Image (cartoon, rainbow, N blue to C red; front, side, top):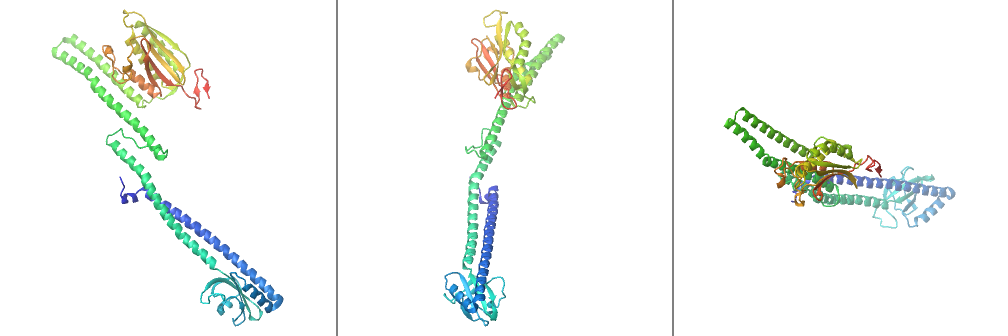
Length: 483
């Protein structure tokens, strides 16, 4: 898409090009004018000093040998090829000796003082051609006049060169300004236009669009990468919101229908006070279950959006694991199993105690629900559930392993999604949100949930990064720093 000329004129690139053109042109003109003025003043001072020195030398000749010696000296100097001008004239202005044609009497009658610029003709050149010179007249006794000067043709040529340089510099500045404008318009304006076009597509609903990254590493690439990360986050949140909405519409429809049917049946059949109480009690249980589902969904959404309001503070994961193990040990025993605890600490992490505890509790709940008692064992047979906490490399591993049926490898990627329940677990109570919350907690802490085969059974490991000290050094399990 090629912008129109009017649009180009209104762009920041055009305005910047004009500003740069004016600034650099002004700076160039100032520098040239300053150099020209300084050089001209220096040449003028040198010229005046040279003329004054010549007059002093010739006056000294006059004092020593009178007019004859002065005329002889001027005649010798006049014959030398140079830009110097000499003239000795009598009281009437007639030339006695010199290399300058007759000058107006008004010039010869100038008072002795600072040099002045006059027009003259050389005796050894074309008499009709006029030159410019700076001369000084010195009055001698008897009405004689001594004139000494220097031709300023070179200085005039220098000033002409300076004027031409200024014109050339202005032309170059204009051309460079136009080139800069075209370059900025094609590169910068093109990138901005691409960003604007991508933004319009995103606004229209295409959240998969991303800003172009050319790989140049410039400011536009940095901006595009930052905005692309933001768009990735927004897309993930929008996708999560859509999935939650779909899950609510799909998975909560059945319990709500069941609740309504039970109440409608009790009202239609007139089951009496006992029947109504039973129906109301069952309905309250269904309502509590629905409230629990909504709370879990909201908590998962807040954790995934990192807007739960819970700060990540320095914690010891070993202490959290020990507390959860102490709380669940009697629960596991009541379910006919045995909890084996293997905690090696301290395990420094930066996290939220309530969320990490909730994640471990969800993993233990799943182990109790799906692995106790063991498959094929009679009711009351003992099964083992292991809670292990240790540091491996730069990660803290909180593992809950059981000896139940486990999860097939092909199903492990999707069991962390909301409301996903495998076929053999649909007859058991639950909502399919436990592992979703654990996965969200892992993501909030910069870690991950790893599901593996325990041979037999399932090994669910919550992997969290080791806490860094304020200097960026990694904390060891013994509490020391790694520098």
